[in-house]
Length: 435
Length: 194
Image (tube, rainbow over all chains, first blue to last red; front, side, top):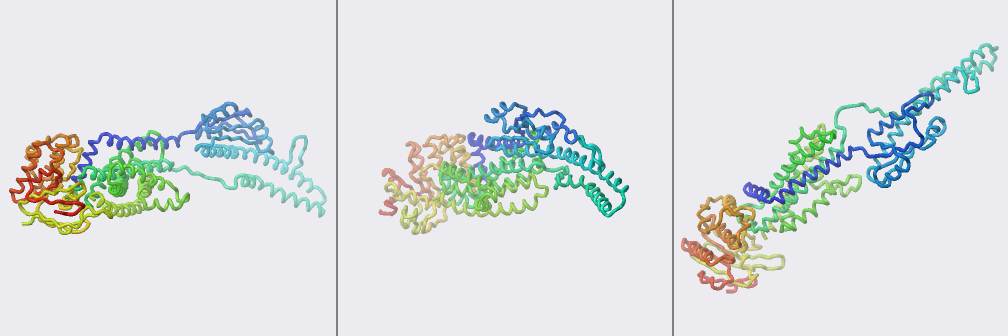
């Protein structure tokens, strides 16, 4: 069996086009997926149209705050480009910006009035980034509101204090509850005066709680986000796991199917079946070929991914420390997929047909593995019985879970089980090769 | 003495009968020529006798080493001639004198076999059947694509095997080649007819 494996590896080495494709394919896939990962981390370009002529500092309710600071916080997530309304509309229509945020004329007046809600206008394209930009702008509005509500609450509290302690309000002089109480105290304490003093006492107590009540009403729930170390971005984890699993599945299936069918194309299956190799050994050698090639390519792609992730500054995961674990996962996945490839190659009985069949089979397998459970349950359940899904889970756990062992155990059992079934099917199918 | 015997061997592909139930024996020092039109079942019978094809029914008995030369050269095109010989020797767990075989059939050891001429590929095909010094040689149109000199080598090989007490069975469309046979078997429509 090892002699046949060595032969297949030698044949692979002497097929420069195929070997080149095998080496280039995962690198291209890894780079593309890495770029997607980097792109997902990159800032989309958003036009900022200031029709209101926002000053650097806005005073609301006697509180000054730097509106530019809040805008700058949003600019950490997107690239804000200051444009006129016309330019922004043009750039949005030709896709140079993915969204425009307009601060309309009258924004500052509404802001200062405390009676009319000022509004921002967001226009987005219908592309894939629009939801992300919408989230960023919602974040901007949320942060602006947080800043503004402090000002508004302060303004409201100033008026409450005026009622409590008295003072001037425009042309008016406000007596205030304090003075009212002392005035009432100087009057004959009739039943009505006593009633008014009781009211003043209750009103003062109630107004004393107004500050807390206003803060609580403005922010019924406050989101507290303590800073902590650890993995921060799951997207790169999923992308990397999918990239490795996709490549290994694709190549292991094609390689095993092609190598198996080639034995018939070259007429050597007849010689092999003359007692030189059992059917199990034949399947085993082709599965080993898929596993060896899968591990080699898996190493390559994992290294490329690690470099892309490092160079791109994408945080999250342990691409280097867990590399040996990744290889175990790749070995299991490639072997299971390789068994399926042998079955396909045996059924196809001809290398070109086997390659085409492998491509036709692998694409739905990959797509099924990408369908979330909630989207289409039958697809999810079918993919549960295919190696790709479990390879993705294995790799994701190996690369990113803090405690991956339980997941690895479950997914290893799945891959071994599926692999055993596929091996048995392949063993039966290779009978067709010699027929 | 019977070296190889087939009892009721049959091969079907669905409803198509490639070889009807057939009894066949090959005795020591015998040379049998299988003749018949295309699709008569000659190659199928030889492949079943060689153990390269499982019969749908029946069985093959024999406790001798059997060499098989398939109709179409069967070797790895990306390996050199020597690598092919060494690989099949290793798989068969035998240690032939590869250099002697190469010299005898004048094969270039370091040439990639897929780049050989058809005649040289057929010679390699024959040499691969000799790795375990077989007592029975089964040849499916062995001289197709060979030049007269190479054909002479093949028939010399046939005579040699017989002289050593072995047996040979070969399929041919060339009736002149039946002169190398001690017995001629005619097949038609998957049956032995004469």
